Amino acid sequence: MLQTLIPLFVDALANAALIFFVAVGLTLVFSVLRILNVAHGSLYSIGAYVAASVGLWIVAAGLPAWLTFPALVLSAAFTALLFGPVIERTLIRWTYGKSEAVQVLVTFGLFLILEDLQRMVFGVQSIYADTPMALLGISEIGGIVYLNYQLALIGLAVAVLIGLRLFIRRSRTGKLLAAVVADREVSQAMGIDTNKMFMIAFTLGVLLAALGGAMATPTTGVAPGLGADTMVLAFAVAAIGGLGQVEGAAVASVIVAVAKVLAIYYAPALDAVAPYLVMLAVLLVRPYGLFGAGATRRI
Amino acid sequence: MLVVENLSVEIAGVKVLRSLGFELKAGVRSVLIGRNGAGKTTTLRAIMGLLPREGGKVTLDGREIQDLPSHERARLGIGYAPEDRRLIAGFSIEDNILLPALALDLPAAERKRRLEEVYAFLPQLAQLKDRPGGGVSGGQGKMVALGRALMVADRVLFLDEPFQGLAPALALDYARTLARLRDHRPEIAVLVTESSPKLLDDVADETLLIERGAVSRA
Ligand SMILES: Nc1ncnc2c1ncn2[C@@H]1O[C@H](COP(=O)(O)OP(=O)(O)OP(=O)(O)O)[C@@H](O)[C@H]1O
Ligand SMILES: [Mg+2]
Image (cartoon, rainbow over all chains, first blue to last red; front, side, top):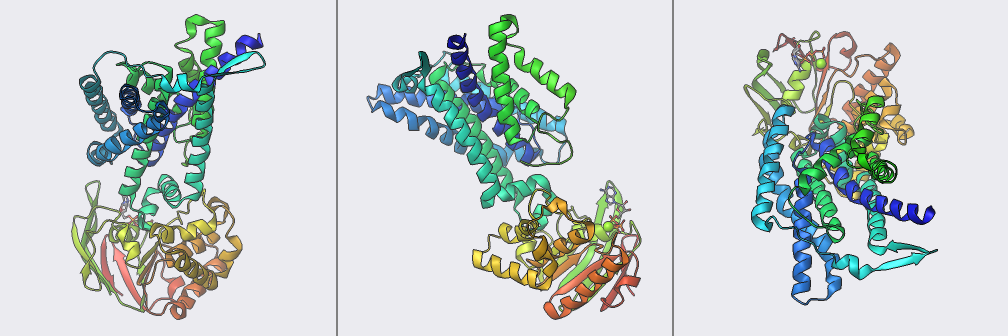
């Protein structure tokens, strides 16, 4: 029993790690900018495409294979810097102060643009670059075999969660972001350049999405449609945790991933809808999510 | 020092400020008196750049500031304590007070100097410093909001209805604090809004009246 369950749960936690990166980015952007970026999932898939292409190129060019590890993180950073500031400065900034319907329409338009852009640049064939996964290999503990890359993913997610917490609580920029989340107008009056904070938060959100995509590439192929699938899942996770809640996103990622595993094990037909059933159940009981509190805003 | 001319604001199509004007002079405490809904808060928010204007000019020492983004006023030495305190609930009281200094990215030594000056002027804040912003009483919160505004108010200090909701004893205490401010920061221009003139007799050097969005001198 344990022999089959433990690998399944490690699998679930590794998936949770990937979902967490995207969902926490979505939630961060929402809490600071108060915009639900429908195109957020596309930035995950762009991060994945960039990372997979760079990974394949490193191997094809005969460069040392270990370079594929830093390449994952650098691909995410490159994606964030290329897309984050320019999208926030143009499309997103234009929607500030407009109705939520306009914001959803504009970011949906952005989603369509980014999806087409990916087809043009990366084609429609699935790309698979699993060098980092193969390099890290496996370990066997107590007769159970683990994929080391999955363990690394879980570790990275924990590190990102702690890092984000410290960033928000301790760093100057993090505290200013928290102030903007709590009270935008007072923040301005106290001297905070909120436009700058919006750009920083949006770019950080893109970085987290792209990091999720990049880190996913060694485990799975990248193909069109990934952005939309990811967006829906990230939204479910963010809603379960409570929009704007960093810890909420972490806990919800684990819940959703475990629900998926349980579904696969006990009710295979429900595998795909398991996350949304969880979301429905949670929102019926707690409409603002597990960690959400309705009126009070924080990150 | 700070001159407001022809300031007009519309909210949802209604003229709330009608081409109002006044001048705040260095070292002078002015009180802006007006009934509920007269436009006191709107006047301050418009000067702080937090609202779109229909027209008008605001100059600080001869320099036009009305078109600057809102956040640049803190750097010019304009401190603002909004109506209802508006502390950040998740920050400690000390972090609330430090927020403007953090926003302006003042050097650590300067941040500390200003904080100690605020604590010296409002010693009760030093006792509250580790409490969460959401964990102080209304009266204490007003003092925190005053301390936070004083972190940057080298030139101008705006206090929006600081007496509202204070019990008489606390209101007296606050009025005394404002009287002490004259010695503490003799050179700044202060504007306090209030709906009834009584409390501010000892504080005011000059009284302005606001009625239906227009200001006149008393
Ligand atoms: N957000 C808003 N939407 C609609 N009308 C508003 C808004 N804010 C202010 N007003 C209107 O503008 C006018 C002036 O309001 P303002 O808040 O400046 O008054 P005030 O003098 O500060 O009143 P109070 O003593 O109650 O604080 C009022 O008639 C008010 O109804
Ligand atoms: Mg008011």
